[in-house]
Length: 225
Image 1 (spheres, rainbow, N blue to C red):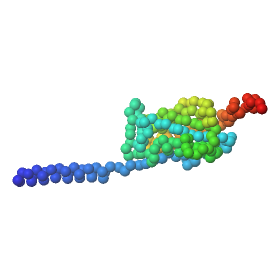
Image 2 (tube, rainbow, N blue to C red):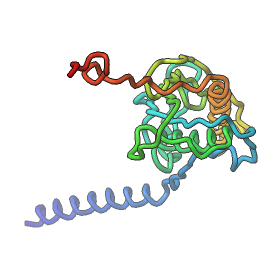
Image 3 (spheres, rainbow, N blue to C red):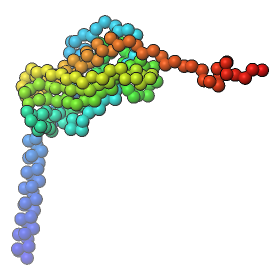
Image 4 (cartoon, rainbow, N blue to C red):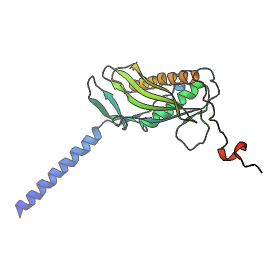
């Protein structure tokens, strides 16, 4: 009987130690920090003069799966990824990228006619820009890196007007600092926005697709009375 009591007491003590260890671990874990990208206007960067009168749809924007996660990602000199559990995006990196890109493009083009695409607003668009993000991360040598493949379409006809593959790097103001990394990532997104805005202003505005009457309604084909 006494041995059974001792066994139960020992089990209770082990469980209590385990719970105490878990509580201590939770109490000593550093709190998570959450970040968002910054638009050019908030960084004190000004846009250009008003553009010719056109409207733009931006998106969809696709990210590789290893970046599409809550944690901020760095890549070392090789192929190893560093996933920081205590430094995270405030929302999703995909939504934040698109949000800031739209703000930047509106600032650079001097127009509010810049929209996410697709959306529920049936606003007539002239251009669309699709983006495939290949890299958007910190590097082992303390830079922010953005690599993108982007396509400009005439929205009405979906004709491909341009295909580009571009890359951008900015050095961190403070090595191994997450706040400096996010600031540098915002800066490379601003660099990309400038290239897209400059490209769109050089392109001719796509004409409206021709709307010829159908053969059934053409006067020459109607039966004579």
